[in-house]
Image 1 (tube, rainbow, N blue to C red):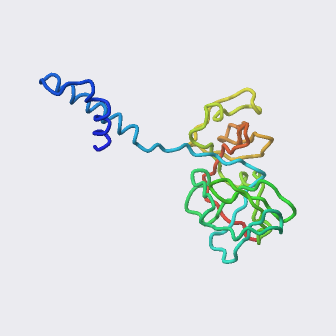
Image 2: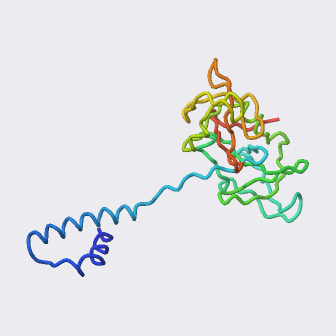
Amino acid sequence: MGLCRNIWNVFVPSWIPATGESVNSLRMTLFLVLCCLGQAIAAPQNPPKIRPYTGIGILLLSSTDAEPLYLYDEPGLSRRGALKPDAIPRYQWIFGTGSHALPLIVSARKGQWLRVAFDDAGREAWLKPVRRNASQPWDIFFKTHFSRLLPGLQKKYYKLCQLPDKNCLSDLSPSGFFKVLRLEDDWAQIVADQNTIGWVRWRDEDGRLLMGITTPLSVIHP
């Protein structure tokens, strides 16, 4: 209500008189309109979720691991400090909830060293996982899960095509799921149902992820 009163004080007294029944009615109407306008301006807006860049794959760490992992500017050089599990973006709207696995997007590899995005700001550093098979390229990752298209995408990304970007067959729903057969460049060949095999984009033109999974994440153990 304080915001409404402030807007009233700014806009109304200078040009509307304070007497007369019709004038008072007009003043009240304007007050309510300005109040609604003020509340709309003050209402917090939910920012759109930013889809991560795909990089070359995904690293799955266990949140229960006792041994710390250290971040480096270069493999084995200029140590920054320990990786903080609480700072790792969970991307729950992509990878789901209820898992002890911590997903890290891998952008590069040098031997056993991986460059990962380790916080919500997208900052990257190098680390060396304890388990050598803790990371997967995207084609292996998606083949082992039921997948889905993310909500809120442009219409063109829900197109199921007979060939990559050719002969579109139908539109997929973000609530539907499918199995990935293989990835080829920016496209994924999928089985949408028992009788339908086609292609959808799994990342956009900027290299950002378009697909998520419907099954829980799990850490790969040796």
